[in-house]
Length: 235
Image (cartoon, rainbow, N blue to C red):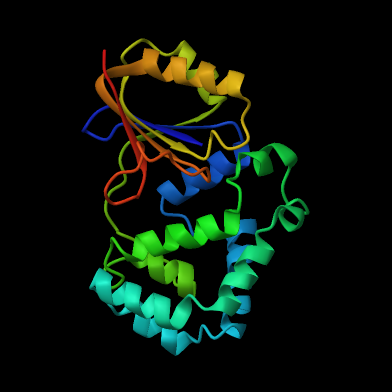
């Protein structure tokens, strides 16, 4: 899934090769209701399993009420990051079990020891952001959906196409920023090279690329907040 921002005025082009995914994004942008998919079902199952390891709703609610990252880490290490929970996560995210649900190319894109990597990412998040003001923390741990903002959506053009195909057909220096949502996970290197070249061609001077991936970033890619990979494209 690729989102392209034409300017600070928020003229947005959303590109996806899956027509169902694109239709859902279009519905949500128009104020349509959320729909539970496979990921939401798996997260719900994960929360149920976590409750059996000692993650009670009261304990999670107390954790989510914290706002100091140091206090959050202390609480996490003492009450939530238990040996039982670590064992369960590492077992469920082992390649053999993931192979029952996901294709081989995607699995190959995951970092080794995906369970420990995911646990480390969670801990980095608690160390950087206030739980109290982070609606996505409550969504992850309790299943509470973030409140709808109620603000006017930017002008969005929805395009059903392959991302590289679409960018190659655009005029040069068209977009000021790009967001790439897991598009590189499982994609062959030759396609990624083509996509990168298409982005460079379609990027305006000073454009920024924000990527989301299951892959672990290199030490040079990590920002101080350890949130997302940012790359400025300079011409």
